[in-house]
Length: 171
Image (tube, rainbow, N blue to C red; front, side):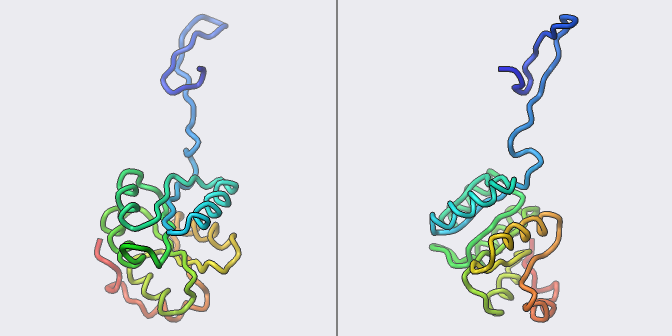
């Protein structure tokens, strides 16, 4: 099939062979991994992100499965629920910071209290999106943290400023 990486084809003009390369579907897209114990949430988020040119490269329903898959896939961004079976999202975030330090983390939760947001920031996430927000918030958060920024609810700014760099997890 034309376009497969490394295939050689004769050109009609001069008979010389040349290598034709095909870009992969995930090339130049942000590669995201989803961790949520609710399949309907993962399905909805995956569909929304795919429509907006974000590549969902994997998903997991619990922390143990997430760790195993993320080590192999090394996504750009991980979107993780705070409440997970087997291990909570905070502990998962701490472990992921050590295992895949270049991967950005976004907590995705139904909890909007300052306590949860600050706790997850201390665990190493670069963003926090509450599930009752418009879906565009998650898309904005993914793009922002992928570019090296942070994305947290505006009303939490003062509380987050109180977190000293020493509070961040060790990588």
